[in-house]
Image (cartoon, rainbow, N blue to C red):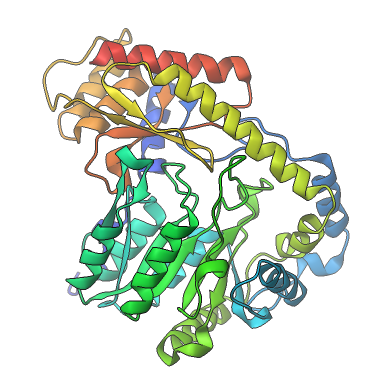
Length: 430
């Protein structure tokens, strides 16, 4: 073409969680039965949505307005409800105009970075969730700017690393938190959150916090919502119904905006996000209408408690099976439904792989393994040899070698068998 039409950040758009699926489907055609451990979809892994939740949704489908457009910012009644829920927590107080709905959090993240000034960088955690790291890197045209999560300290943020990255890089305009974290399952104590907010306050930054898993925090673990610690600092919390109802197919997420009236630049930025939403008219109507009815139902608190306790037990189970395996370290998660394994010894970058019985699959694995990161080499061998499909840790913008699996499999026997098979495969590989 006479003009280059490719965006400067196009090369940064990577989503390892989905990319591995393409190879897995090739292996399926070659006779491998895949155990999908790459994506956080509770429904796909056999969890049934509660009957009472389905009944609420079914009732709403009989209302004509659930099939129509809603406000560009989102259903007004739902935004009023969510603002009241935020205000009940204590801390920052907001109104309906501080809630903005999107077609899932992927849409919210994409819109947030697309309309952020290119020179303004957002400092995020490493390991990083791919939607954020790719979105930030693509908008800037550079590699995602990260701070360290410490695997030897329960994957907690390295506060000194954050302070230094902010101090010596004046392009940093915001700090991103994911609490509970994806991919590590770490949950941040209140003093940690307050320390990060203080860095933002001292340096006139805004804070973003992905709270997708805020209602999947294991029993006995304490943290706080961003609204409770943000003070007067401008901030955005991202929330969704995809993991906690769970209803990922609804594509319904929203942002809670704090203190936009305290900073004119931040207020103008938020206005630009709403302006962008107006161009696409509105986001999904039915799930927005369902949010107040589901969240206010007397059965919802016990629903959340049951699921958090269930994933806590599964975390104990997985750690018990995997932690005795030589060559890896495993930190027990405290929230969400993921488990991250780190290799404690250097992985081979080349050379012969352990044998795979299916010759066609073995040839494909050898082809892939010749030009990828060591942990990705392991993951693709694992996929071909056992059918287990995790995500390499290098795919989460991390220099550590490892992988992420889920705690989602609803079939107890299959879940335990998968972890046991994984432990055996690691021993064979190392």
